Image (cartoon, rainbow, N blue to C red):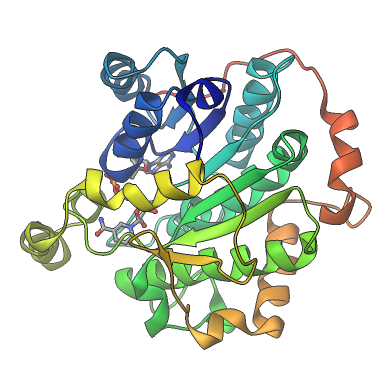
Length: 319
Ligand SMILES: NC(=O)c1ccc[n+]([C@@H]2O[C@H](COP(=O)([O-])OP(=O)(O)OC[C@H]3O[C@@H](n4cnc5c(N)ncnc54)[C@H](OP(=O)(O)O)[C@@H]3O)[C@@H](O)[C@H]2O)c1
């Protein structure tokens, strides 16, 4: 069990920390003394969230960075800023990949990728890759990626992962949440059992947030506006994230999928090695990670390469 004094020295990066589950998780961890780095997509919403999280902080620093995670250069710059902010500190204890987006129609990101796949999967993949050395530095780093029970009812659509044809909002969302679980499994597999970093996927259940109303119209928006009322509060949903972020010991490395503060069995499909590897290799290509770049197994030594850099304002961020 961590004491608050232990927690005061801990740092967490929460993406999508301006509303819903991410904001609730940031508040709960701030209340336990964590140094919070929250990420959101607009400066205005970041400022409001920073004030709300600071108000409940138990003395840890609370800072926010505005970055549009659909843009890979902004994901990389966010990682640069986090490295800069934590230079001289013990490292990054926890990365919570929480930000996500639902869109009724096909939208291409600035990099030319389907928007839900870009924000919900490629951004966590790239941000995690970038921050692994910093997570490893703490000796017990955690990567918590917020997935969904909807991953059970889908498969990867390999012939057209970006849904350039036959776009259907919910299929695209479910695929991105399946990608979160495949990514978590493959990351743990590549890290190996002795790794100083472990990855977890979280199913928050049905939660009363605005996720299904922001980028949607018509029937999808209408259905979500009613369905969300049956969901639990964001604070309740954030409990599993807080549990994983604060538990003192790693548990069974096989326990990588969590719901209501307990490990659960994810879909059998999400444990298929062939699918995990295929997604990993595709994601590397889509993020421009060269075969000569440090592999995940090399990451512990790689942080020497990613030491101190000048902070850069995220071009186009915080619109
Ligand atoms: N709600 C549910 O029932 C439910 C169920 C299963 C899984 N989940 C998962 O829970 C996580 C949190 O969702 P939520 O329900 O709390 O929804 P939410 O309130 O809409 O939170 C999503 C967060 O992501 C941010 N975001 C969206 N697009 C972004 C972008 N391009 N760049 C940077 N940040 C971006 C949002 O910023 P803004 O504040 O500016 O919108 C917001 O902070 C997601 O991963 C979601 O898939 C939710």
